[in-house]
Length: 532
Image (tube, rainbow, N blue to C red):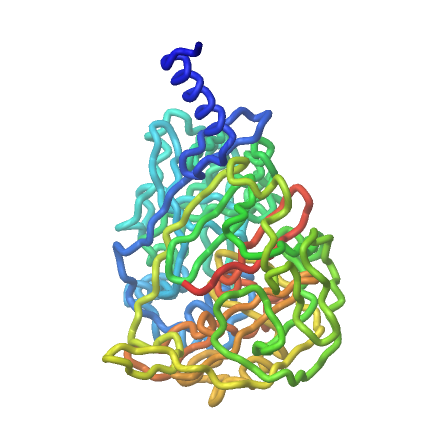
């Protein structure tokens, strides 16, 4: 006869065995051996510590043009000159670089550790560059910043004859020396990471005291260190991950995350659709892909998998040929292909619904998570995002949006997925198609881009990836008012003229879970809940 003690021991053993089989909570997972793949969790919170001096939203547009060495149009530069901060004007008059005030859109910041003992630095994670650079201690203009002091690190070694320099389209630059040092993000450490220490910093960055530099996550081939380009932190650690990939789950005015080594099935609502990377040409070192078509507005007969939509639309189409799927790889099960002139459908729940990533790679215990703290832009007035509101018991509520004609085209758009750019920058014809559906919208010379009434209800914008479709809610595209209290707002979609490539910045990235799959040289997009 079994004693109670023996029975109790047996129950405990069974419970332990069951617990070990259950998925682990992501932020409790510990690093595992390289043979199994590494895991990490880095929590971040919403950054409410500081509200930036408000600048004109066209400054974000100019910043993106500078980043990709595009010529800033005269009328946009005129807006930049009008809204420079006084300290930036003084720097320019003293022969330093041309500066812009820090834009007030969301910026995603996470803290990393550099050196021994560890120096904690708040950094901007940027898939549109390949340099890990930090502001050096004692550099002019870095007052208020957390800076890196190589002399205080016992593991820092200066690389002989190595230097780095990033030049921008307006003639400004950031440059300096190169060290190797220990860099830790979360609980993943690389001992001899190239750390580019700025001795000269563009005032675009010195004006932003919330960050100490950038963590570049593009391909190492475009790293700017000379005479020999250096690997990014991700390229150095990816062989120790469960899968050589990372995901960006940026969100609208709330915390988001970067996951390294795995795809979190809970972070998206449907199939992940992939496009092969464009690996040749001027933009071959970026996360460059081809979107095979686009739609302005939302047809009542289609479902994109997004749970938030700011506008409904009629089934009329301006062009109804199906996307070609150029540059796309297989998407996995659970969805049917895009039909002629219609949005894609798939999964039993419709749209992108009912699919949990791609098999074992989606499990939450086989990779790493880096949660971000986004810095919110100030809410200047209640309808700053373009909602049409009515009062109900003293509280504003959103009215039913008006119906619109749906414009659907199979025009291919080649672009870069760039977490370091705020706006969605598209070819002129695409931009014109979009704002043709926004009442009163105009390409304003005075304001440096497309503007419209802040109480306008904006249509959604969707783009095709392989056989799938990603929808950006119209609410996201109302970037911000042109000034405090203004009833005129600046568009989150602007022209990519002068760059030679579309830029899918945070306006687009916040609408999807984006998979940066280095191992398979592809970029994945999946719909997610955008209702919050």
